[in-house]
Length: 348
Image 1 (tube, rainbow, N blue to C red):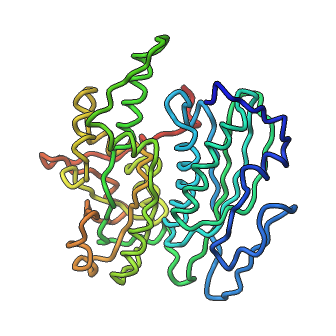
Image 2: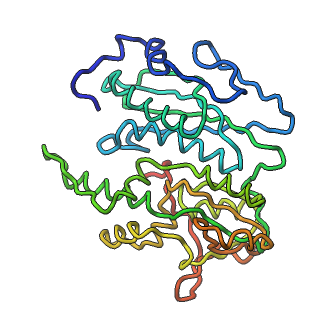
Image 3: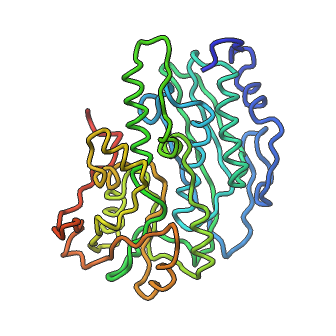
């Protein structure tokens, strides 16, 4: 946070701060008729063949992020992108967001400029309009609430409850890297706790750090699905861990599954970091969360359209519900999947 050249937020007030942070915003979607500056934004979705998707996410300091190692610009970017990911996970396109902030007196205008620089960068990168929000004082720290609005053709929306027996289970990218990035940051924080000079060495670990601090939504996967003529039978983004998300799909689709340990995609830096920390890399990949990759199922007849897709891995298949949700280990043993992903409401 800004320590020098501070401009207190009180010098601008609520409306002055909003005007300052959102000055110069231009819209890219014809559905956005009017944005920041009135009591409500005005949106228009006249196409009867499209439906509106709405998602919201709340990030709390001390629960979802730690400002000791999270730059505010990265935090702003991430807070927007994780909402875009939810829209993509339903095979939709994010169009607008609103951003509401609860801000304590620790923060100054320059801090909020950094946060909004990240939010605006995310909006520019993914072609999303920032149309409104709110600010309020906080007695404890920083809270960020983002609501994202998107659209999808009625017949192209993908839910969690459509997986069918014999469907192929697929994931994009690699898993466990964001969690390993978090573990690295937490380790370095503990090492340098109380020291005046903080000079952590992150060489060779840049990828896992970026996956934690600046994740990306898989817009490219949605575009490629369309290009290949594939509509998944079910889909989710992986925010709480592969195991948890797969169990959501199985529960809501009333099916079981088999996934194979040796098919779970894991990056080299993730494996090296897990070894350094004496952690089981498969457990990290199954339960780490915050990868924001896409988990989806497709009919077995679509195998030919998937198997040559670099960046997407077939990791298993859907079964009858009575067969349970199982992991097949490298030595061909079966283990029941458990939802061990991150749960912010769990008592510590």
